[in-house]
Image (cartoon, rainbow, N blue to C red):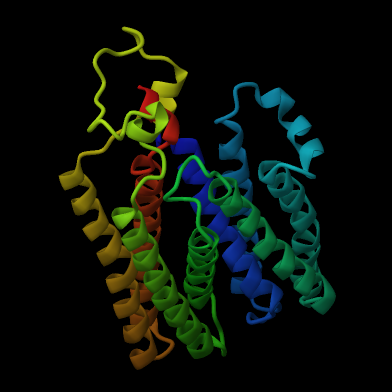
Length: 301
């Protein structure tokens, strides 16, 4: 599948923003602190930038509102509805923190539930596609949710006051869980035997191996551009090493260093470096998520 930059930006930044919104909704950060007020603004900014980036992938952005009407059958529509619904309590709690130095528990719990459901709806846009077998698994929404929570708690650790150690421990836990889930997901994707193949599609598999004699057309079309993207195996392997080091090794080391040194400048620098590495890993992982996906329609091309 073609790894569109707008979708990669959307899924990574909005996921990180919703992960931070979960931490804020659970009242881990003191609303009277300036850092917490900044955390609210960053969460809203990440979500807004991500949602705005998703509009760039639409053929006609002016008609994006029509997607909201199909929430009964479309995960894309459900995602849009949940994103708007979550934005309201999150913004209200941000206003309370900034203007009144307080946190509303009910609004916080609603924003937590809404954030998790929005990320889940985003993941189900891909997990529901039977035509892309590597995506069509319950592991896909699990990975999306764990990546969001790991990033959210890691980002929140930078803004932490007295709950710094608790947030760092939870960030470490979610990074490890996300790593395990992604390794299981990738092992499944690599060893997956396609259900649909040229042999099964043509019904000629009993004769032998079926190969394409001639392409159906001489020029590329929408399907070959969007569904036929290919990445060299050696390049994919290198990118997975980068994603592993930046997404697991460096954040874990940063969190361990922060926990051992305490709430000082060294810990803050370590956490910032860990967050930057984690975000880089997210972009690489999400690029590979799309680039390595194989759509069943390409059997005919």
